[in-house]
Length: 264
Image (tube, rainbow, N blue to C red; front, side, top):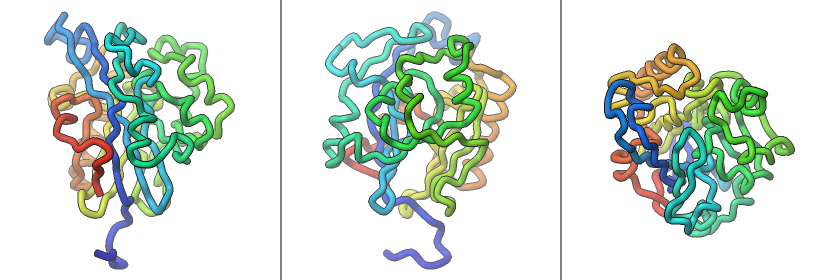
């Protein structure tokens, strides 16, 4: 079906990539006061956007060097990262290589979101200015960053964003500023012709319980900004009539179709 002049602009396809699994030893880190000492498994996704022959990636997942290592490795915050299938292999199933991705959009610089930065060092990166300052600042450790994973970005083409950004100028890909988890965290609203609007949360909220009960993880940079960003997620979903995909919600992730299937 061809779009009429009044239809909103959309991207062509959205692929969900399995970007690994994170196992945290204490769920109460995400839900203070509840489930103390209980381990929790978090899904980790990356999202590939296609529009008019151009490819954009939202986050890069856990370092695929861990693929084939069943036990994974503890990387940060005492969280173990595990990779069942590399991002490179998943791209190959779509007929792509990392070099075909021209743009990378970053929600924030934690290991499970930026772990494969080196695969996309030749892409143009879009990062919130506050995030970029924090990840390369002297206090990076206070925010749980792992600089060795993204050292290559010092030489990359980086576009620094300030707050909300309509990336393509037509509303089809919109960066939504949602700080709190980290200083410059952001989320992404994408519009699809058949699926409709989808809001990719990043870590503005980790799962449905976390959001419903407004739980602020103890690792977050700012409780006040986290709560404001959770409210913004809900307000955006309501205003745009969007689906909300919570990156670390394992139950929700299990309902999604993964690449090479796609949403359009």
